[in-house]
Amino acid sequence: MVYWGIPDLGLLPLSSAAYRRKNHLPGHARARRLSSLKKKKGGKKKKANATDKSILVVAADDGVMNQTIESIQHARKAKVPIIVAVNKCDKPQADPQRVKQELLAHDVVCEEFGGDVQAIHISALKDDNLLALAEATVALAEVLELKADPNGPVVALIIESRTDKGKGPVTTAIVQRGTLKRGCILVAGRCWAKVRFLFDENERAVTEAGPSVAVQVVGWKELPSAGETILEVESEQRAREVVEWRSHEEEQQKLLEDQSAIELKQKLHLEEYRREREGLSHLSWRQRKAALYRANKTRFSMRPSERMENEELGLPLIIKGDVDGSVETLLNILDGYDSQEQCHLEVVHFGIGEISENDVNMAEMFGGRSSRWRSLRVLMEVDVFEPELGSMLRTLCAVLDCSAKRLEGSIYGFNVTASRSIQQLAAKKGVPLRLHSIIYKLIDQLKDELSSKLPPHVSQNTVGEATVLATFDISVGKKKVPVAGCRVQKGHLDRRLKFRLIRGQDTVWEGSVSALKHHKDEVQTVKTGMEFGLSMNGDIDFRAGDVIACFEELEVPQVTSWDPGF
Image (cartoon, rainbow, N blue to C red):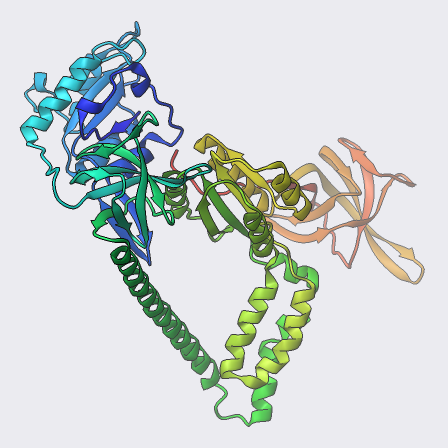
């Protein structure tokens, strides 16, 4: 499914190539981006409408799918009219009438059913009826009276941005007002440009672009983000002033947000500290110190292996994409990650362009941090409120650093490559490179990597059961050892596995056996129908009628519960 906003059908090539354009982003994600371009800046969302009307392409053989419903919702949210293009009408199993009837359930009423939505039957493969689709789009534009002023300062909207090896920072923008020409001075966000070249959708150089024309702009000093509004200014000096002022304002806003977050964190820590000290206020400082030590004794006595098991599971990620839209779509998908309690997923860096040495070094740096960073945070927080406890924790931090569990940072790239030298560097530093050109496969590999971080589930599989027939004691030196005479009822019992003693519905004991004999011979296993005697580690009280179960523990790989929705 494709979701198109076509500002000017007069400039749209009607070849089938335009309609068969491959795009490996999910159709509903592409629809969301085009209908309402959004970019997070400083914790806020900037939003700009990029479409005046939408063409909803539905396959005549598949009918209305989940992606179709979501695209309809995006169009309604953007408050843009819909034209339905029923595609694949050349197939024998095509049923356009069924498609239009299914759309009624979602309040998309075509003209033949008394509504105002145009429905055009097309075949993108055979170029059938594409002219009718263009005429319908032009007719809707006339009804909506879509007009723009070609004069005055340029106002445009960036719909895509990327870094080209030969051209440098390149943006694709739709002109909304004015006429964009070579030599214009533009400002977008915290970036500015003096237009050096303009290219159309066929990579042909053009001298100007009027309203509703999509054009590639070359000449940016830095790469702006998709969703930014382009404004024309009178001079380079004015452009620098605007960029400096915007940068200053954004930095001030960020400082205020950071300060508010720090103050809130300090307030919460202080409240927690006071609650913990309320019960110790009547004690002397020596008694208080001893009480605090006892409260934190488990942290000091924990074995290194136990500390490693308690380490927070995490996956630091670096995301690189060919264009800003690809990166934004991936970040939007990752925003829906809801399994942080299983494995902490953190995007430490994202950007546009090929994988660089800096990306590999950053992945190694963030991958190497674990308990060392948490130790330092604990130390700083405790030192603020309790210097005495902080000095004791310094020793703990040193031990934690020695047993730090390494987290592997990964680099995921969409439609980008890594040079041979970068691949060798990543292999040397143990940084995995995950490069994909299809977003579904990228997300699938990410889910697999998240699942591999999770500890396996341990399941118990009962392999055999026996019934206690009689009990007696034997002398081993000066000690009497209880022995149970049993018969295997089903399966087999293996001395190397674990055993469970069941009395009624309760488990009385669980552990390993110390001896397993058939007649007078030590045996490894006993099978169904065989009688045997066994003794267990510890002082066990056997009773006739007890059930002895033999079970093995199996590790089952755990799978992440995150569902990205496609």
